[in-house]
Length: 304
Image 1: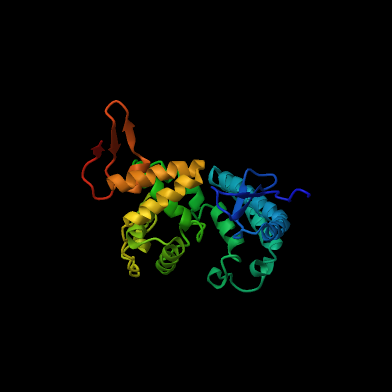
Image 2: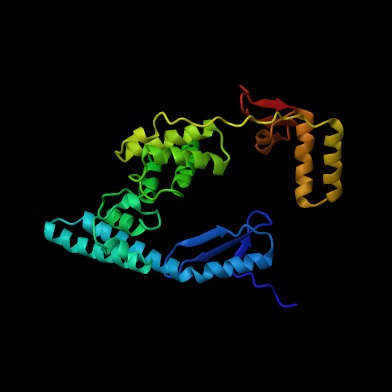
C-alpha cells in the first residue's frame, strides 16, 4: 500500500482531529488551523484548498511586514520632509494591498471615504495605512510590552488568553467602541464556553490594557452580561462505578491506564480533587501523601 499523504498534517495531544501546520514562505510566521475532521481524506482535501491560498497569505504578510518597517521609519522621522516621503511610501503600500484584494475602487472612487460603510475585510488596507501612521494601536504590538507590567504569573496568563481572544475579532484598540465591546463579550462567552466570573476577569484585563495604552477604558465599564446557564449538579460515583472503572483500567494494562487507575484509587480513598491528585507529593520515609489545598479549602492535607 502506498504511504498516505500527510504533508503538513498532524494531530494534537492524542486528539483524533486533524490539524494543518506550515510556515508562510519568506517569513517566520507559522500557520496553524484545525481542519475539524477526523477523516484523513477530508483533511487532505481541506489542506489542499488551504495550500492553494498560500500564495495569497505570502502576499498579505509581505505587505504587512513592509508596513511595519515603514511605521518604524515614520515614527522615528526627525523632520517634516522625511515624514512626507515615508507617508507616500505607506500610501503606495496600502494601495497595493487594496489592489491585490480587489478593493482599490473603494479607495480610489469618487466621494468621501467612509470606513463605517465597509466590512472588516474591506477595511484591512485602511487599517494598515492608519496603523503605519501611528494613528491606530495594534493589539499584537502592545500586548507583550503590557504583559511585562503584570506581576502576578496567574493573572498574566489569564490576561494573555483574554487578549488572545480579543485579537481574533479586532486588530487595533481604537476600533473597539461600547457597542462592539458588548457584542464581542457575548460572542466570547458563547464561543469559549466561559462563565461570567471568567468574563469579568477578562474585562478587568481589557480595562488594564486600555489604561496602559492611554485609551478610554469606559468602553468596558458597566457592560451588562447575560445570565449564566445553570450548571447541572454533580453526582458522586457509586462504589460499584468506581470498582468498574478500576477493573477496566487494570485490564487495559497500557501506560495511560496504569497511571489513571492509581488516580482513581487515590480519589476513591481520599476524596481529593483532580488538581490535588495531579500535584500530590509522596514522602517515602513517612509513608504519607501531601495534597495542596484547592478551591475553598483553607489548608493543605497530609494523609497516610
